[in-house]
Length: 391
Image (tube, rainbow, N blue to C red):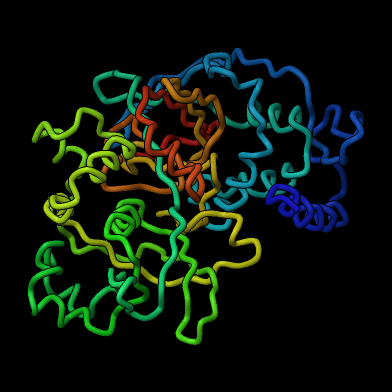
């Protein structure tokens, strides 16, 4: 059973309860029943979009310019129900300005695409997100959740530690750098006994630090094997430095994608440690169970809800608030995206008005594609009509 189907089944129970307590449809018009779908009381058909458009609104790092729905590339072609999984998750911890939409969002989880489209156009105003100086094009990158193999105990093969946050982390800011953690007795003493697991490859550990979380098939001391998630817990408060930029600045590579970096590593093993230390930031993790429906979603993002593959993005919070539905358009050499996504996460490198990091999912296939995504981006924030844009 797919995630979408599981969510739709559970939402059907909620809708049945709501229908039993309701005195009738909330809005008039034709419903999904006419096309053989469940009757949700939401209309379909063309939405008249002629209301006057107001002036731009300003946030700390962006301005939002109201536009017509017709400006959104590919809106009529998106599989909107896929985005509803992410929106349901956002409704677990909605921002105050969007909480009022969640009752409809839950009921619409079993609605037809026509009902969902009509509701969006009737209730939300699209705003083109621009930089404060009016630039509407930015950059899209992508991230994912790596899958790795590890050991609960240190062995000759598995000797690269992954740590819980040290007790002294808050007392010293910034904490020890990556190189100091590897070399200073004082840093190593502070981390003694904080090991969650051990990996057998320092590059895999770096990937986990960069992505912020991962799935680990871990061997326990008794020989049993199970899957856990290592989720982001904290950093050492050191600046993030890209190893790709370090390699480019030294003319060691011309392709800073992860495949290009991996190719350089394969022929320069003696310089790997130098490359690793070029990034002083170090990430600490917490262990989470990974089973049932939770295994069908990604780690929790900065909004505090699990990420949905292909429908969650990380944004600069000074441009777009967490929980905001966003229309995303991006076309590059690898892929073209025209879809509804939810702003549910952030990242240290995700800075600027029109900037997003797209959650690809987990595993090698997701990682291979995510590592190649660096392409132009345009964003439209979808905000409740009549509700002032948050400052």
